[in-house]
Length: 389
Image (cartoon, rainbow, N blue to C red; front, side, top):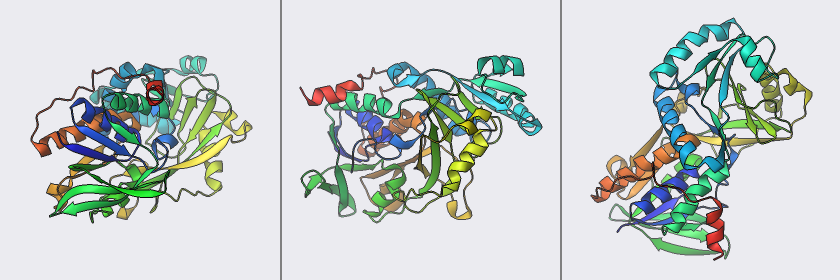
């Protein structure tokens, strides 16, 4: 069976290692730092219902609602199944309600209309001027625990998960991938590893990895800031009922509230600096939904890079597509044995892995069905416990 080398130890890499291991492939995964230390470990932890994208990106919305149901069943210990609200605060929001409702219905996203008295009884911290709301099946995930379920199961099925292992080169022979060179940050040494297929799951760093094989990948980091507050304002995820925009979501995480997010183009996913004014902007915007936000200081603030697929030369908006793509660089760029996965969201990590594993099976001429929609996941603690057995 072919040997698959996965570059990138985030959620997508974890789900792909799990899928390919179930299909019987020999799998090794390499992450340059600690597992989940990139984009996966820096998002706000929303398990999307798809409602946020129903109007502007129905394909992504359908992906989200389908995977929402699957992940709730496969990894309940990694999430709080608390639901979400889309809240209208003014007439402009109310004008958006009809197209929002119609779009959710078209994407098979269940919603429930709520009048002001109902929604304020559920979430008293909301702006008392709230005019209307829709309840949606959002949930909150623990970004680390969810991915570790996949890593634990992949490892138990024979995958080799190697952290602190940074890819330095992709070897090519006669236009085909033959292996990689990895720098081991633990022993400060380099080693060469042979493989039949290299899969680039490096997220916003995927462009850098592709360049090691002289391939251009249409990915660009979309940088966003999030701010946490050391109190929980609401039991449910709170979204503004309007087109996706900046500062229009509050995600409860345990006893914290995560305010988010901004979006601007970046060139380097390792440069996550942001101006202090963005923190104030998140407070100003999110306090429109929950006025008490302004009464609290920031607990922490950080930024993350999204791996966006788009023609970004003309700029970016919060409505940019959030679906995903898997590329066979043999067909696309003449570099056989190289595959890249870009775009998507944490909610769609399993679907991204399934599509990519299907592509790999097609590349090697094997017809092996995906089992990850129903195959039970081991508990996330099993990853660490098995290492010490």
